[in-house]
Image 1 (tube, protein in one colour):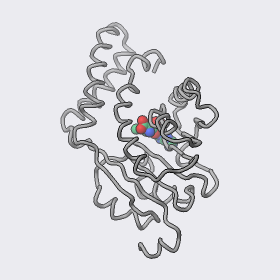
Image 2: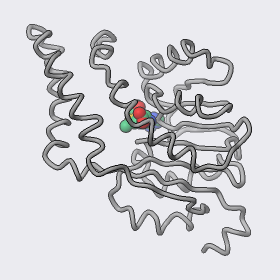
Image 3: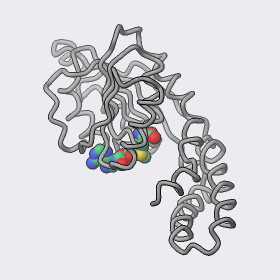
Image 4: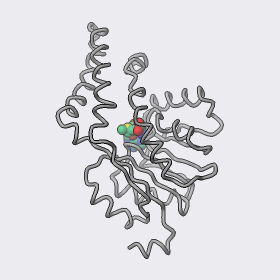
Length: 232
Ligand SMILES: C[S@@+](CC[C@H](N)C(=O)[O-])C[C@H]1O[C@@H](n2cnc3c(N)ncnc32)[C@H](O)[C@@H]1O
């Protein structure tokens, strides 16, 4: 997609409506001095930048989409966070950070790529003992996922659901309005119209059953091995 079109769709602007939930999740963690944070599947870094504002930590965002990482890199520079933020092209299937590298692992909209349980299992080694894993995930299978958390070496600190229609009201509805405006502007541009159609298909799916698109934040803490036995 052309950079200009991406810029005009302004998806990040709608995504920013969800920063209040990122802040709520972060505030459920104890205060940490200069935490090392890994944001997995950071995209263009809306939440990643918010994490930098919320903490005085060192933050690495990883994603496989270079155009989104470029966008994040521009934001890092604009905000003056270059001394403590990095955007890395890296697949979540190939993270070779040493064991116990991070105080916090953050994942919004990305754990489904590897699967909730596999994500919990594989990311555990990257966390320092007593480090935190914060996952923003679809609400589907919530009860089952909540039950599984201790078996992967974490304690559930807290969780909260976003309001049922948050995704429709705060993201897809404003996005639809924007796409409609742009469709008029790009009426003669077949490439752009194809892109808008893709967006519209996704919007239509959500519009049909907005309540099926609920999401949830899980806030977990890595247990030390002796605590882990007790939880099992
Ligand atoms: C739903 S988006 C979420 C983006 C961002 N975390 C947010 O909340 O705005 C999922 C992100 O995962 C990235 N992704 C997909 N497959 C990936 C992989 N194998 N490794 C790392 N990132 C991946 C996509 O490029 C996309 O940016």
